[in-house]
Length: 368
Image 1 (cartoon, one colour):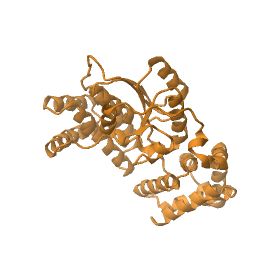
Image 2 (cartoon, helix red, strand yellow):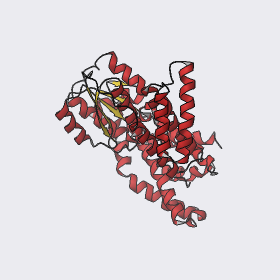
Image 3 (cartoon, helix red, strand yellow):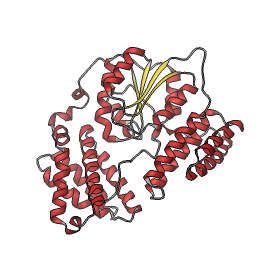
Image 4 (cartoon, rainbow, N blue to C red):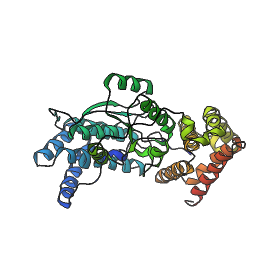
């Protein structure tokens, strides 16, 4: 292993990036402006990118289409290019910043009588803010008063905001499955404060299965769907306050708690075992050692997330994605196997965790 995977979904824009335009003509027009914006993003020219947005609006493309089918489409392309090793992490961050500035160039919709008030936020430790912003801006364009709180909102601060503002609903975004435990706590806390919760983003699954599992009142696959659902009528009032284990009774086996609590030790001991058993690891540069430790930390993080929701596909899916990224950078998927084997040795007393690791090795074997 030796691949930086910290920006797993930062590039993709998440599932909130929006659906396609409603007609072939609109599709072609949006694609034209997306291509132009892409060129300016690649050039790193913020001013020219803003000019593209203003020109698209001037040519008659509506603001929502510019937001979702031009800017959102470019952000998704950024993710594809990064995963294929055709764009660096620095280039991806630059592109995201330009797209964020392009969003600010859109007209501000100020309805005389808003539909209602909504809060849009990323769950705690979720730094992928652009998907949530696309939702917030779409809702503003549809006539809502929106409090957009941005990335990494601690749950206690989110609840304080809800008590002060009394929103009709709270929209929570998360792109990484590793945030699902924190998302669950946020969902239950917001509901206990009396507000219904709509969730969205890649973390909750392509079909929203983890949103339902964690007790969210609604889920939307993209920004348009979120706006359409909220326009259709109020979300159901949340269920009475309850405990986390009421939603996830499998947590009673304590595997998630034990593995999550020992994650730092698992990473450290696995890395040391790699050095002891494989001489080439001892010859790594400082940067290679740092990246390998980061990769092991991501593997443990996705394993604990899978244990939390009892969903091995979260772990196997992450490994398959990582294998593809490694392959694009000239590193064989086989490089993941030693770390998995050593990790499994340390988890011999945790049957679910070992089963997940076995499934992960099986998923990787199909790519060898």
